[in-house]
Length: 628
Image 1 (tube, rainbow, N blue to C red):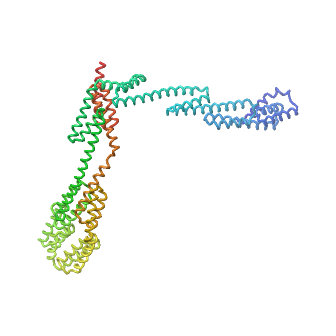
Image 2: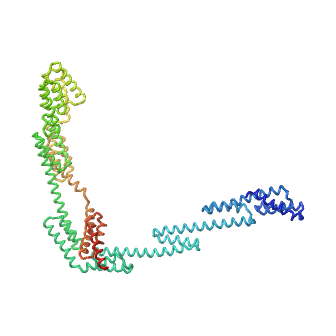
Image 3: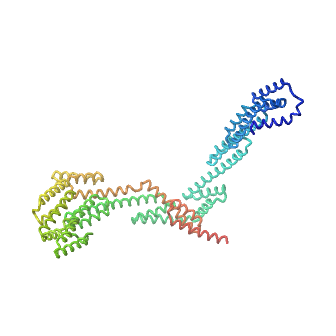
């Protein structure tokens, strides 16, 4: 309701009740005093007290306009303060405590304590803010304690809960949380103790200290009756104590088999048997020494194999070079490819293979072999060329022979046939054909295809030796090719040969000292002085093969990694063998627990996974029979 509405309402009440007071009219002085007292109350922020005073004046002087304006002004002030109170309660409901306190504080500052209704609303609001602040702080301390409790930081949790309890003793949550935390502490202490005892029990069992392991697992059962793991281990221990002699005999058998296999030089099989003996804690030190001896023997055998491999690669290279020098390129390729199978990165073999391929390509250009992928195409073109020639269609015949020469510029049969055909044409046609061939030769020269250009020009010469400047062009191109080949092929002097020989001898000394990288570099230098030094190439090939084999071996696992792998393998074997032993004696749950440990160490072991499934089925059957 607006101040004006309130004022009108009060005025109507006054007018209705006016007759009752008509006989009690006050003097002007009394009215003036009441107005002044109302103003004093207004200035003291006691707006309802001022309104009451001024209402009394209106009872005596209903038409006093000054008083009416004063009442309206006081009502506006009061309405403003009540609006702040309402806003304070609204902010309190939303949890905006600072805002609510500011609103209540404003009203408190701008009102008079004598205004009991307004003061009561403000006090109750401030009290509610205080309670909310208390609850919020209390909740934050409880939440902090809960976080510490979740992280099992029990001391910090209790500290937070105790602080909350001191802050608000009447709040029962803190005390409940303290009791819960102490229970959790006891549980954690028991859990930690049980974990330590379990680890100790497993370790003693793994070391075959069966009596000590048995005592530990019994203590676990005392602390936690019905503990499944303790029951399994006690069952395993009872079995092993009962079957000790038989298990010892089995372990002895593994060790003796290992010794026999070692004498037979079956080192990999011997290692497997010695690892089984170690897994059963039998002759552990001797078995480990035997394994080291086996590994050393295997390494020596591999070294010899690497040496043989390098020698074999060098032999294939030597044979390949020999056949290459005899122009027997296919035989050369066969030898070199065998060497490449043994050492795919051998640079010397790769170089001679490339030489063979180039030489074979040049041979094929002269005579197309049946093994060539172009053989059928060339044979068809030859047939068409001959048929056109026999019919007197010389221009058509020329096209077929030229197509062959485009693929194989040095093909002898196509060259001869083309020359013969050109000789049969009339002079004008021959001139036209030769002019076309001459233009083609010029274009080939511009594109840098010197060998093809020379072949085309020589065909022109076979028809007309004096045609234009073909002879001069041929000489020019061949000279350019000779210069280019000389630039590519270094002339070897006697001094170069002596230097190459000196470096070769130095390389032999380095190779004999197992300084392979230095020997390789030295022999490469020797080949720079004399690229055709066959022995340097062969020994370089041998050294490169040997070095690569050694690098591949070195790139394998380190000694520490090998030792770690051995230990892991032995642990896996231990659990596997014990699982098999338990299974064979009807202890299926015990077997499953051992094989599950194998899977933990070797998750990809599918055969063990199958064993577990089989044991579970047996366990279900035996359980069903026991219940019936």
